[in-house]
Length: 510
Image (cartoon, rainbow, N blue to C red; front, side, top):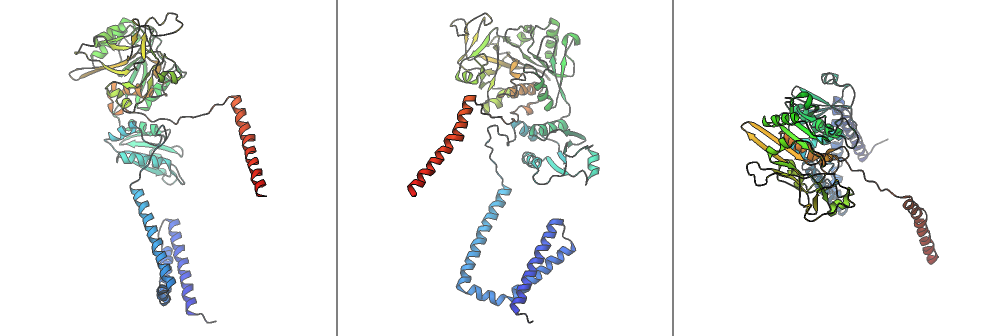
C-alpha cells in the first residue's frame, strides 16, 4: 500500500503533537526535566517542524486565498485578545488590589498588626508543618504581612519529608505553626490574625511586662468567667504578651517591683491607708496606675488622686440621646463618641468608634485652672447627658432637675503624666469598671479602650490601635405568629400565585 505525501506529513504532525504533549505532561507531573522528557519534547518538535516544511506550499496557497485571509484575520484578532487578557492578568498579579466590604473589615489587617509589623527590627519566620493540597489560607495571610514588612517570611514544611526540621522545633503533630526570631520560638494554637500578631510580639519583645490587679476589696476577678468577671481582660492582655497577676497590697506592704502597671478595678470597699500610701510611693518612683471606680463606692483614694488634680464625682451619669435610646441598654449606660486628644483615644476618635459605660460617674480635674497639673479628658459624653446627684434615693424617674443636676457634656475618664528626670509616672482614672467586664468588653470598642490604656501606661505606644474584630453573628428571630405567616406565604400564597398565573396564561393561549 502506497502512502501519499500528505498522509505522511499529517501522521508526522499528529505524532509530533502527541509526543510534545506527553513530554510536557510528564515534566509537569514530575516537576523535573528528565532525559526521557527531553527526548519526547525534542522528537515531537522535530516531527512538527517536518510537517510544517512538508505542508509549506499548501500553507502558502491557503493564506493567499480569500478564506485564508479571513482566517488569518480571525487568528490575529484572537491572538490579540488573548495577549491583552494575559497582559491584564499579569499586571493584576503584580499589582494586586483587594477591597474588603465586610462591616467588621475581617479581611483587612488591623491597625494593631500594621503597627507591630511596621516596628519590626528583627526577622520573623513562620513555619507550618503540614501537607496542604490546594489553597493555603495561611500563605495568603502571610502574603499580606509581607506587603507591610519584608522582615516576615513563611515556609510550608512537610514533617515526613523534613523530620530534621520537625525535631528542631519540637513539632508533635501535623498542622503545628511555629514562629521564630533569632533563638526564640513560639508554638501557636491558632492561625487567626490575633494569634499570628501575638506570636510576633512574644518572639521579638525583650521582656514580658507585668500588669498587676489589686485584690482584697471586692474588685473584678480575673478568674471569673461570668458577665461581671475580668477573665476576658486577662486573655486579651496575655495575647499582647503581658503577664497578668493579682496582688494584695495589704499582704505585700508595697507594690512588687515586677509590676509595670497596677490596676485597681472596681473595688466595692475602700483601700486601707497603707495600701493607698504604697500606690503613692509607687507612682512617685515612676509607676503606672489605672483606677476604675464605680459610682456609689468610695475607693478611699483621695490622697492618691488629689496631688494629681483629679476628683471622682459623687453622681451617676445618664444619657438620653438617640444613640442611648436605640442601644437598648438604657439611660444609665451613656455612649461616648467624643474623645480627648490623647494617644489612648486617638485611634478611637479617627475611626469614629463608640464606647459605652453601664453605671458610670464623672471624673474631672479638681482645679481646671491649675496649669501646673493639666489633666487630659479622655471620654466625653454628649450634650444630652447629665450627672444625677442623690441617685441612690428611691425615685420613680431619673429625670434632669434644673439647678441640682449637672448638664453635659461630661467627662468619664482622664489621663495624666508626670515627668521627673528619667522617671515617668502615668495615671488613668475612669469612673466605671463594668465597661471592661466580660459582658461588655467585646462590644463596640470597649476592649480597645482598656487595652490602649494599658499599652500607654506600660509605655507600649506602638501597640495602641484598633484590634482585629470577630465576625458578627446576625440572626433573624421570629415569633410563632411570624413563623406561621412566613410558612403560609411560602407554602401556600406564593405557589398559589404561580399556579393561577399559569392557568390564566394557558387559558388565553389555548
